[in-house]
Image (cartoon, rainbow, N blue to C red; front, top):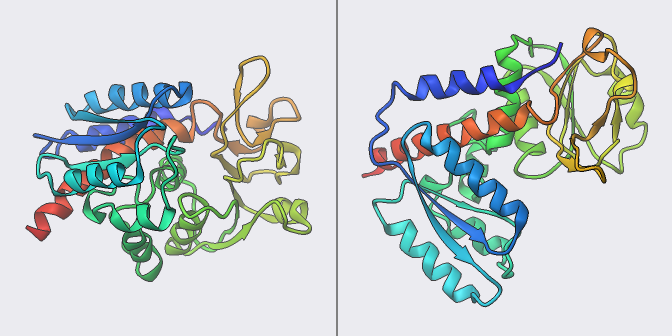
Length: 278
């Protein structure tokens, strides 16, 4: 079965339309002269329109200093008209990671990347602000009624915005997760023994579909562009009709679509959290 994201994403948006969606504004630090970033920005604008949210773009070029960046950030942190903040990385100006992850207002942290929100993920079962891609992976599996309890889960990738939060989300749902990466020994054996595989290593071909056992489920978070301009994931589909043997999310059209919906969900969550602290 193919885990297509559109239906799951539409369901998330449909639920949000029952919420108070008035006066939502997302501020985005946007790198200039970056083709990929331009594409991401247009996608954000398209999705924000689904809930009538506004976008405020803060352009960033190589001339911006760190002091200017953080002055802009502090203004947005304090501006009550700004509901959420996102920083499109990489930026053309070098920003110390520790500074970035401690100085974004955690209640405006749509990406769920601040130390405050990461700490809430790992020290509790709180799931109010989860990094969008990690949350989208779980939502997609839940949409297709994949059972987590007691299942062996392999998360391939250890970033703090996808792999590690995914590990904790699976654990919250009574799965038995393990985290692997490009340096893991006997990775193919671990892949073959897993009931659910979440691939977020950013390495094309780290998994081949033939390595997945019959009936297992795969969420592929990777995004790569081939020399022919085709968008593909981390997993290589190396046999025909694999959707009849295993379950997996296509790239494009899988997790990425749900990630955009989770951006909207997190923006609404940010407003709720701010109202609680007023």
